[in-house]
Image (cartoon, rainbow, N blue to C red; front, side, top):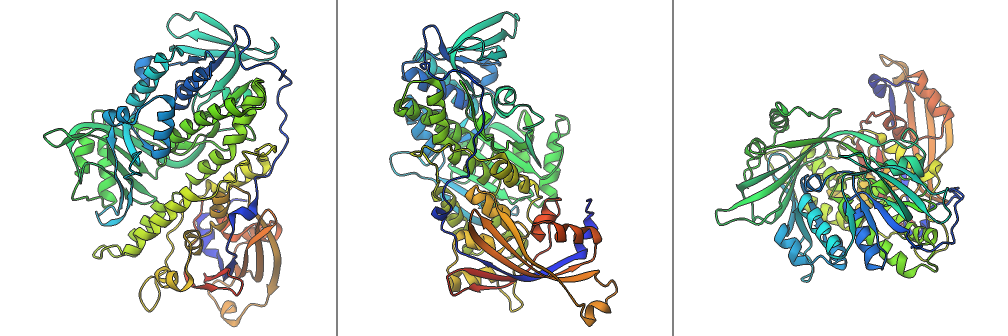
Length: 628
């Protein structure tokens, strides 16, 4: 069925939804499945004689994993396709407190990181016109900084130097051409070619860790099956990155700013301390809602400057135009990530870092998650009940799969940016943004950080979820376009959400749920990393009213419709709607498929128009909303 944009106007729904307050623990652990792996021996130790662990890819996760293996007494070999110089390219990245602690455990001191980068003490959100929306405190706990910004190349240098000091064998310019774990029992044979001489290197490994990024050939060839079965997930946005040296410091020299919402967003932060003249090395990134990125160096800067101007960017504390103009080179990328796999392991081969759970570049999650993978590998080596390679890798997967998959999904939600977008669309440009928006950002970001992660670390159950459930069904729903801003201005004036907050004592998740515009399933599915099942309880045709009969274009039919939404056995929403259908194809989809109305439109990249009229609490503590 093909749905044209004009069809959106021909499907109208109004009704009342009841969203029961959710208790995360009630959802339990992810659904499990038995995923067949290659028939390889499992009773051989992690390091057989002359067989060493092999890490493919000198990403943060790859270098950190090699250090962990070396610290555990295993002579790991790190293979990297690029040169050492190429590894020092890139732009800025942010190390959150957890990442800093992880680096400390690998032998990298906090002082080394601070000397190479810049301490970030605040993260501030702005409308494009410079109005302040909110600020998060990033100062840390007094022992560990809350955030350090650093150039990716410098971080790679630090990690590579640490690995070399510990005796890790690092081979650059080595492209892996083949991996074979079936010919020699207890071994993995890895063949790698020298990029300059084409000489072939053959290694006998005890295991292979694939840390070769979102374009992981190891993932496609040895775990998921193929790139066609497991393609990268494109989000219809482009990402431009640049670094400018000796640029005037802005604000206090320790603040990361995020200006804009879900359409065009500028992220700017220092990655070096200011000099005596007040100049700093500044990293910037601009995310744009466009299908194809501009990769032409001769037009890139003009393209970005025009985009910022068209979208009303005017920050009085930062000259964005000069920042872009003075940047020597700009790198452009599509915004992509990977969908969750059923498993990261196949016998003695295991994925880690972005190869396992490639995420959207939101909050520099890739760096932190790669470091957390390495720490989990360390714990798996220490806590595994046996020294069998496959057991260690499965233990590692069990410890990280659920948490990483959950964070992978959360990166797609970007709730703070959506709150900024709401401020941009509902607060007049002549007015300051009310402080309630800052409180909402703080609450939702804290909720995401503190939300329970039901990782079955101490469970014997396999922590994998069926591709037909979590991995496939959940993330297919997230192909929808960016959420249409929800108009919630009341006729009497004021913002309905603000009026409801005190009376209903809304949690951050409930507040987001109230303003979901056709994406309630996606929000709950993303938050809990579980599939949402939709059950249509009632779809009954009713008589047309006189108003409908006399309309310029009468509806084909009018229906009463009741839909229940479940996660597992727990129903979290009952939606009762009056549906007027003007299009035969839409009627067929609604009548024959268990889908929500908003889900139907959003799966076809169409954003429904939505207005919230009222909301309240039910007797059992649940929440209801009335909308059209």
